[in-house]
Length: 153
Image 1 (tube, rainbow, N blue to C red):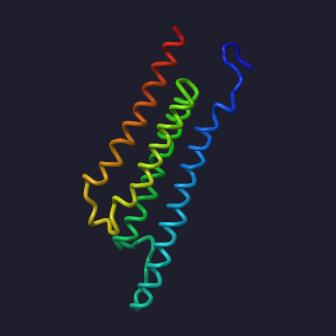
Image 2 (image 1 turned 180 degrees about the vertical axis):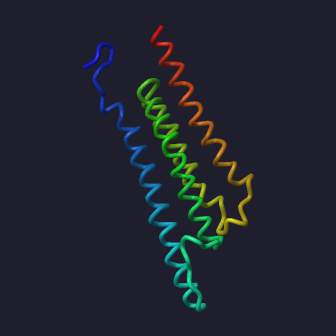
Image 3 (image 1 turned 135 degrees about the vertical axis):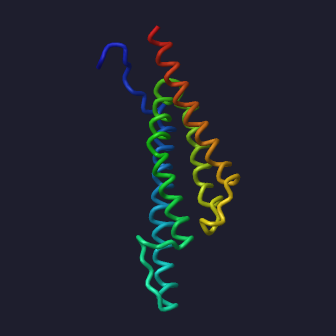
């Protein structure tokens, strides 16, 4: 073990571990639930009208909405998880759990606030999720860096 670094207290990290698992559960729910379910439903609907649904060239608003929900959640995965784990290890695992839990609740609301079709997106509704999520990431990241440098002292 490196000097100055104590062994990991797994009991203290149960919360951040659970939040990490919950984030992946959300992401896979969006990926295999929302996105895949939307793709196959649209294929059936298009076929019933005698049309071919091209998944990768489609401009169907429902498919674009599902893609956006998955992509946005994926884009934010690294900043969120990295900042939450830094916060858990440097500041407080308990507070990291609370902030991480709040983040996941907000992130889960994102597809609902997009609406059913991408052209109906209202930026104010999406900002209700986006800005607080950025704030949570920013807070955890900044606080972790401050605490790490303060401990270096």
